[in-house]
Amino acid sequence: MELNQGEQIDDLQYNELCIIQKKGLFRYGTDGVLLANYAARGLLESGLLRKKRQMPFQILDIGTGCGIVPILMEGKLRAMAPETSVEIHGIEIQEEVAQMARRSVALNHQEQHVQIDVGDVRQALYPNASFDAITMNPPYVRMGSGLLSDATPVAKACHEIVCTQEDLIARAAKLLKPGGLFYMINKTDRLTDALCAMRESGMEPRELRLVEGRPGMAPVLFVVTGVRGGGKNLRILPNINLERGTDLCSM
Image 1 (tube, helix red, strand yellow):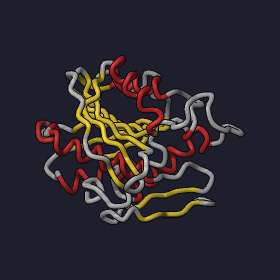
Image 2 (cartoon, helix red, strand yellow; image 1 turned 180 degrees about the vertical axis):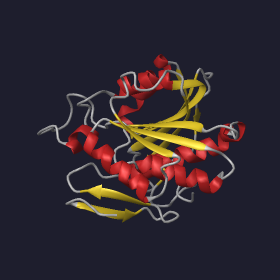
Image 3 (tube, helix red, strand yellow; image 1 turned 90 degrees about the horizontal axis):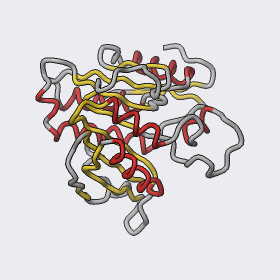
């Protein structure tokens, strides 16, 4: 595939999957890989995929960026549950970033199962209650916090310039089918906001794991599972340790 100026192809080190990235645009990090692994494992363990073998299981990744979450999730679900049919939409508000993600999907021959859409998920792009599962890696920096020089593509991905975490959680709740699953990763200082917003929107937090860099260090990230219309039964599972490796790293 011919690359544009400043682009490069990076190996995702999983089943020959790769991704196009560009200097000056938001590049995927550990959080995107963790979210893809966490959601894929959660879906496999939930049993929901087995219940929908005859029709595509509909997944949405909000703020997909370079497409790391849909690309990895599709690859992992196809490898571990080949009998199921999965259709993943990734939505990205920045057109240049979305176009690059589309080319990565084509590079991996995933066009039949992964679609990258351009637009604002808060608008009526998708009908309500149309997805079985939703993943989200929202902007980390709260509106009005942190240093921000300008609204570059990287800044838009990291700061709440376009929308807030609460906006996205509320929209995700409407897009999920009853009983649908929600998977999110964010910084630990956004945890209280996230759990409150989930419950307020009708997605009950069901599972929480903190992410630490090394043993003895304070966790810096969290991953959480929510269920639309679920009961109040939050489980706190062991921390994910990036240095030691975890069950998510072995997927």
